[in-house]
Every structure is written in structure tokens, then in C-alpha cells.
Length: 192
Ligand SMILES: [Zn+2]
Image (cartoon, rainbow, N blue to C red; front, side):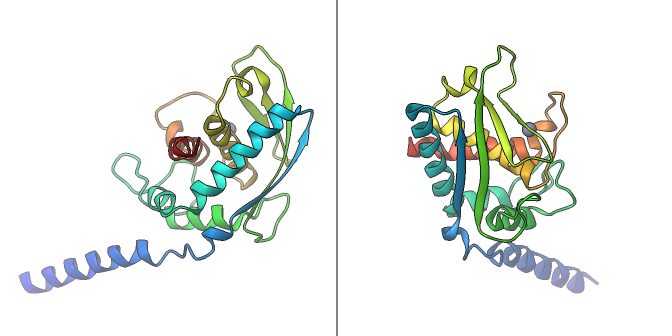
């Protein structure tokens, strides 16, 4: 009895080791972006271009892959609001870049960005039926490129179909949009 138990444990730990290394990152270095701008001046456009470079470097890195695949919430390897996908599947979905409104695996982030000003505390927003993302200049102008990168990536995950609750909670921080937005910002700082 004891022997078979040990055998089972060794198989499952072997599988656990395989599961993360078999997630393909072969396409990660293809990851690209196709962004269009509305109402940006030259300085603002430059900041977004820098943010996009940061996103590409981070998404292509093995560090990003590991952080996505190993992400945990309350001791379990999962995101909140994960649409039923495992961490491994979410990593693949990010690489494939198939937006709900622009379907097809193109390994590319397709987005339209528009600036607006509001005194409110909303950093940015989007609608499910538009590829466009609106970013509040109140924050955008004060943010560095890594923060903008995190914000853009957060909004982009909405285009991939991921949602989160409107009210702040510790749990919301582990949603796909929030957790990945923060991750891009955190890993992106070294490229500033
Ligand atoms: Zn959001």
C-alpha cells in the first residue's frame, strides 16, 4: 500500500514538472502590437510607443511566462475571473492575441486608443462591442511608460473576453485584467 502511494506521488510530481515546461512559448517572441491613435499629441504618442515596447519585451520574456503560469490566489494556481481557463491556457490566449472583435490568432495586440480628460478616478475604460480603449489624461500624463503599459494591457485583456468586478477587493486584484496589468507594470519597470 505504502509503495503504491509513493509511486502515485512521484508520478504526480513528475507531471507537475512537465506541465509548466510543456506550455509552448515558441511563439512568444513573435508577440507584436498594432495600435491606432485618436487625439494624441507627439509626446503622448511617444509614451504609448514606449509602453508598447515594454509590453512586447515583457510578454516575450520567460520571466513573464513563469509568473503567469505560477500565479496563485489563496494557495491555488489560478486567476480570478479566468473564464474557466487554467493559467497555462491563459498564457496561450495572451500570446495568440485573438480579440473577440478581431478574431484570429495573429500573435498581436490589436487596439485603438483614445485620450480624454476626466477629474474622476477612472484610469481608462472600454466597451465590450468596441476595440477602442479610452485613457484618462489625468492619469496618462502623470504615468511613466511602465504604468501606461500596465493600463493598456489591463484594458486589452478585456478585449480577450476577461472581466472583473467593479468594486475593489483583494479578490479583484487576482482577476486576469488586474493581475496581468500589475505584472506588466512590475516586470516592465526595468525597461524604463
Ligand atoms: Zn478593467
